[in-house]
Amino acid sequence: MKYLFFIVLIFFSIYESKAQEPTTDLISKSDSIAQNKSYDLAEAFLVEQLLLKTDEKSQFLILAQLCRLSKTNTKISNTIKYGHRALKKDFDKFSALESFGDVLYNTSVAKFKLGELDSAFVYAESALKNRTLNLSENHKKITQNLIALGAYHNSAGNAALNISYKEKALKLALNASPLN
Image (cartoon, rainbow, N blue to C red; front, side):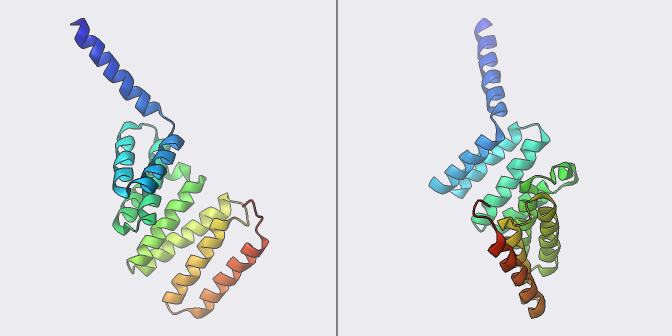
């Protein structure tokens, strides 16, 4: 009986230590797995970690990472799936995090690739608004967002808005600091 109790105690300790691993470490590990092995292994690793995490911020950050990895590996349906999960109402409190704007942007790119231009505009405009509020004014992700919006307008046949957004992006890029 003591032996069984000891085994259960060890198992619980291992489970708890895995659950307590900092989310930033998990995200770094998933990047390494994706770069060195495969997207599928990185996704499986993060999904397993998502089940272990109970705090909402960690859950949000893991979902944001899953969304980013999916976009990077052109897994469009997964980008949208994880993006929608990360953007659920419970996670609105994390809208000031850089990852929140990234999820909006990555979801816009996936919607654009699927040809869902109206949705792509909504997500891209939301991402731009979020990034403008939460990042420095010359941040490269704001420039990235402006270029994407220009491309979306170009696809919709609105060359004037395409040029306007890309001119704003160029102006920001020329004023960006090297450390940004």
